[in-house]
Amino acid sequence: MDKLLVSGGRPLVGEARISGAKNAALPIMCAALLTEQALKLDNVPRLMDVRTMAKILALMGVEVGSQDDGRLELRAREIKDPTAGYELVKTMRAAVLVLGPLLARCGRAKVSLPGGCGIGARPVDQHIKGLQAMGAKIDIEHGYMNAIAKRLKGTRIVMDVVTVTGTENLMLAATLAEGATLLENAAREPEVVDLAHCLTAMGARIQGAGTDTIRVEGVRSLSGAQHRVMPDRIETGTYLAAVAAAGGKVRLSGAAPDTVGATVEKLVEAGARVALGADSIEIEMEARPRAVSLTTAPYPGFATDMQAQCMALDSIAAGTGTITETIFENRFMHALELQRLGADISIQGNTAVVKGVERLQGAKVMATDLRASASLVVAGLVAQGETLIDRIYHLDRGYEGLEKKLSALGARIARVR
Ligand code: EPZ
Image 1: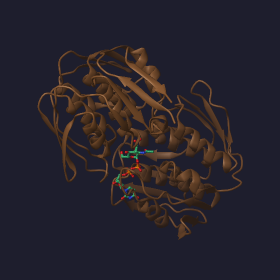
Image 2: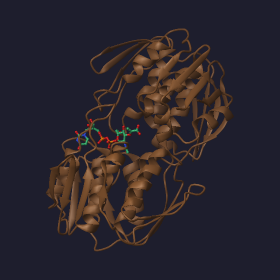
Image 3: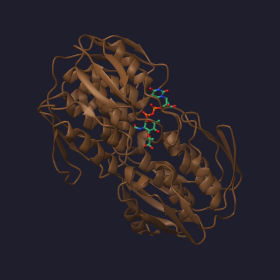
Image 4: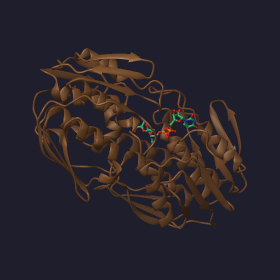
């Protein structure tokens, strides 16, 4: 199995190009299920999760073009089998995003329950509850959600928790429902907005995406469209955190600076100089970072997907930072691995107290989830000696060409067996 070997101690210098956002591409690919015409996407990242979603769609009968230079064409002329099986869903929870569009288009769907996950319980009750409110009948049988509906009916849905994929699933379903759907306490993440843009280009009538109340006026049918997937704000934040930790000067191009506000604010507090352009970000870090404290929250708050990388930064910062995780109950697995590198972290409930040390020391560590892996790479870039990161298949799910991009910035990082 592939591992990553990182030798620390070099600053990062140069330019890196940001890829399309995984968490926007996945729901947008599911939008293809809503029309028999072609959905032509651009800026689709080359990632394992994108390949998994393509496989799930192909098994239903969707024609999936080959991915070429970020372009991907999907055409659901006919949906032969509206099923997403356990073997694929268990590897990627976002697969549950097919449920809403399948119900809206075919009137039935069979989707495996995703089950547990390394970062927390992650139930899908809000997805189910919302679809039921729209008239679907959903039974849980043998680990599958078996859903049927005549035509879904628009209604008012107040979500009990702010859920990103929950909001997306219901928005996708509502586009073809009869009448208007009002989604309250909706997620405001930029990926929800990007999905709304794509659906609007397909002929959907959506207002309020990006606020906590989204109104979808159902239409009879949707058409094909062309859409460019937004830049990945978490990939962007990860490179910014890496520079803040390792030092250096880097320009990130093809980014969406207006989506990374909370991360940039913390890195500036840590001592980085950051300049935002129209679609680029420059970061410069000379001194040792100062510790920062943060609490994760739904957008526009500090993203849970950036928490691990900032914990790595705090590990070598001057001072003590406290990091509180409010979205997922078990998202501190990386703390134990960072400790293997010499970090001084104590966990009290959902808060990690990180006392910065002068230097980390390279060691063998294990990636436990996608963003945990990224935090180990950030730590490896500053640790003395070699850090060998095992189980990097997690990284391949969400970072396009990570080691190539970092090598181009001067890091010593390589994939080894
Ligand atoms: C999305 O996951 C992202 N995934 C995650 O990205 C991200 O960490 C998360 O949002 C939070 O920002 C995609 O967009 C594909 P949620 P999602 O539903 O939608 C609870 C990454 O590393 N909840 O917003 O699955 C849930 O347990 C990742 O790229 C319910 O209780 O997350 C959690 O505590 C991993 N019932 C909270 O809501 C539900 O029905 C927020 O989860 C749904 C969620």
